[in-house]
Length: 256
Image (cartoon, rainbow, N blue to C red):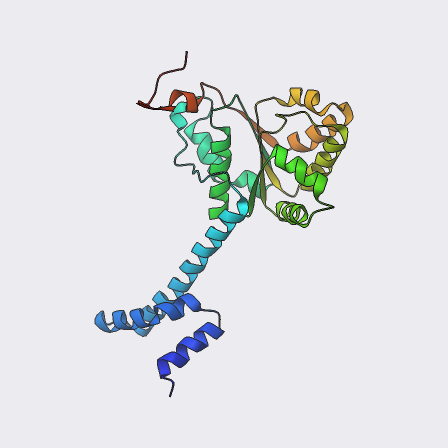
């Protein structure tokens, strides 16, 4: 005959409370040894279920975000970047810009921390409950061109357009033709006023026209990206070169 505890666990599973069911035996022993009240016992049981769900949600959203690596704002060395103050970084962490669908344009040469800052803000946004998607410009153009013919591209575009925050890395690092520029404009137009963007680029907006090649499309894209935006120009030497690893250890000397 099935025990009363087994029935309770099965009922909890039916109610979709698997984490609470898994900890029930252990928590009952804790309740006895620590003489917990009914309220304390229930509070621990419910909180365990909630915390487990939050951890699983965070893990799932981090995976779906498709970050190239896990980087946090805490590991972003603000001392290496004199063009961004600690106060400004703290303001970015508050995510008011994301809630209002503002765009961040991170400019600067390779290695100054553009992608690190973008990923760090993306990870922080996920921790705060926002859906985030990271994609390089080359992959984005490929998805836009193939979304009508491949299921995987269509699914990724759908996930991208459903995000609260989209990070486009290395914007305008390569020339794109008029058709590709038009596809990109259509996407930006869909994001406009609805989705916050973080864009990293080693070229300023004034140079984007050289890559897009079409003045009208360039103007339309700039109009929608820059209307509600904050442009942050990161400067300095390449962090990767200053702290490059060699066969003799980590070099902190500037490359000659």
